Image 1 (tube, rainbow, N blue to C red):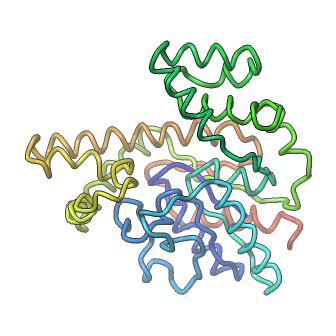
Image 2 (cartoon, rainbow, N blue to C red):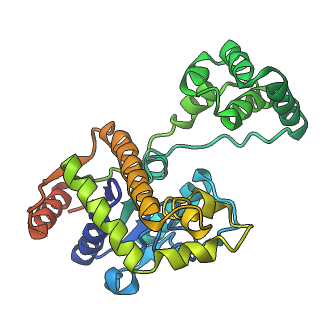
Length: 306
C-alpha cells in the first residue's frame, strides 16, 4: 500500500490509521525524515502520533552521511520483504515521489563507477566555455537526456557524460534498461486530494505550529554544525537563517518559509498527478476525517490481498 501526497495533506495520520486497521507497518518515503535531529522541520510523527505502529527508514541516519535514492530502494525493499515474511502489511508513506516510484516500479540504478579525472576535466571545461557547452556535448550523444536537463544542472550533465565514457551507454539507454524487470508489487496507491487553496491554508497553519513546537531552536542547533550540508538544503531551516543571522525580521522569514513550502507542495502535486494509478480521495476544507478514512479503507479492501 502507498499513501502519498504533498506536505500537510494528512497522509501520515491516514497511513498510521490504516496500519492499525490492517495490521501494517509504515515505511517512510521522505528524503528528510531519514535524518536524525530533523524532527520538526521534516514533520516526523511523534511516538504518541505513531500510536504503536512501527515505522521504518525514519530517523536512522546522521546528517553528515550521504544517502541516495538507490540506497533508499535497497533498504525499503528489504523492509517490505521482512514485513511480508511476518504477515504484516507494508505501507509506504511519504511525499518524495522519486523514492516511491523507484521502489514500486522496481527501478534499478546503474552501477557505473566514477572517473574523477574526467569529471575534473569537464568541470574545467565548463568554467572555461560555460555550462551550455557541456549540455551541447551531451546533446550530441544523448539528446533525450540533454532535453530533460537545464544547462545549470551541471552536476547531472557531467554525470551523464561520465557514464557514457565509462560504459558506452547513454543515460537514456540505462533508464530504459532499469525498467526491464517487472515489479513484484501491485500497490494500492492513494492520496488525499485537497483543493489547492485549502492545502495552502493547511501548510500555513502547519508552519505556525512548527514554530510553536520549537522549529527556530532546531534550526539554530543545525546551523552550529558546519558539516551538516543537509541543513542548508532543508525547507524549514534555510528560510530562517537570515533571522538567526540577524539579517531579517522573523515575520519576513516565516512568510518566505510558507511560500517555499507551498512551492514544494506544488512540485509534489505535479509529480503525483502524473501517476494515474493513484486513487485520489476528494477532501474539502470541512470534510470530516472519518469520511476520508472510510474511503481509504474501502480502497484497500478492493485489492487482491483481501
